[in-house]
Amino acid sequence: MRISFVVFVFVTIYIQKSNSVDLKYLSAFNFGDSNSDTGDLVAGLGVHLDLPNGQNYFKISSQRFCDGRLVIDYLMDAMDMPFLNPYLDSLGLPNFKKGCNFAAAGSTILPPNPTSVSPFSFDLQISQFIRFKSRALELLAKTGRRYEKYLPPSDYYAKGLYLIDIGQNDIAGAFYSKTLDQVLASIPSTLETFEAGLKRLYEEGARNFWIHNTGPLGCLAQNIAKFGTDSTKLDQFGCVSSHNQAAKLFNLQLHALSNKFQAQFPDSNVTYVDIFLIKSNLIANYSQYGFENPIKVCCGTGGAPLNYDSRISCGQTKVLDGTTVTAKACNDSSEYINWDGIHYTEAANHFVSDQILTGKYSDPAFSDQMPFLLSIKL
Ligand SMILES: *[C@@H]1O[C@H](CO)[C@@H](O)[C@H](O)[C@H]1NC(C)=O
Ligand SMILES: *[C@@H]1O[C@H](CO)[C@@H](O)[C@H](O)[C@H]1NC(C)=O
Ligand SMILES: CC(=O)N[C@H]1CO[C@H](CO)[C@@H](O)[C@@H]1O
Image (cartoon, rainbow, N blue to C red; front, side, top):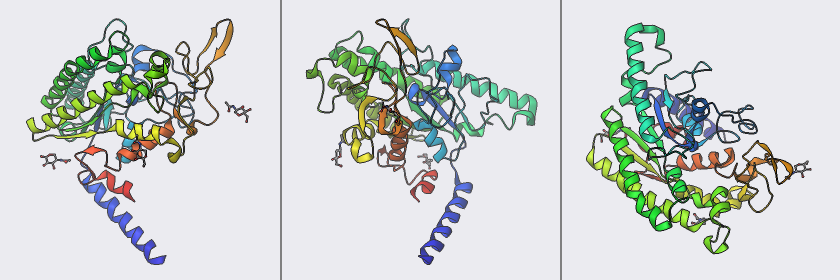
């Protein structure tokens, strides 16, 4: 007992020390959709996102589509960095020293069309990053020390981590106007746009890329309600087969693209993370991981099996068929994987980030190259 305590203390001190001298990522820049939006869409469009969003952790609506923290929040925590400020949130004394979050809910890889939720497509987010960088460097050059505490200096860009989690809305959105075959056929050109974005980031000095693949979107109540009313369309877990098939093909090609990009730019580090595998394992084996509902929505309305109605989103009250209905949160969101029909609960996000941090779902497996993981392994 006593010896192991001493060893533990020694290891902890040693690792903290090596962490503080050896932290390779000075900053983090994130691009994506609602899976990693920490408030950009709400700030950018001036829309409302009220409680119960944020109820668990932030106690106020945290401008995230979740009851608490997102995977990106847990990853920042693991890297010993503060939660990322959304690029467009000019209030609340934003501090961008350690990076910035350009992800906005509803965003796509492809340019937006008139029905898009978000105008902030991948390419536009990268333009925002380029503008951020030049503006930050301009301010730092002009005003010297005054902004040092708030803005990343020039070496923070090459030594930063560039996280990307986007594509879910391209695939899910395509199903509203295309057949499965057409959706599958559209994936290569979507990924060409993705690749062009990666190259733009590379040209701006980005070197460390961390790419999340897309999850099993056929298991989201929003897609099941719309495309899974005929049970022959569902797989053994109750997920829409076509959507998951498209997600898998997207991921296969995204993985190939990541490897190709790595080969083409050997001075970069591209890490591909298999979110699909983590989430489908969670949904298939939910009870083993302490959850009670794999598909049913926590914050929704309509009751079992989905507790989801596309006409009324989490927290809203509306008159439906002559009755006033509120999409309220369930009593215990930690029993649920799905928060609002589209997004995961904080409990599920915690599970996903823990799995990411094992390094087992990454290519290349990264536990040997990422110093911040050492502290997690304890
Ligand atoms: C569920 O767990 C079993 C046993 O650990 C595993 O073999 C299986 O692959 C998991 N299911 C999914 C979809 O990951
Ligand atoms: C939530 O808890 C209350 C009080 O314990 C109970 O009356 C209610 O039925 C619960 N609601 C759900 C959806 O489980
Ligand atoms: C953090 C990290 O893994 N950096 C590596 C990125 O790639 C270069 C070139 O391959 C390596 O030298 C770095 O160690």
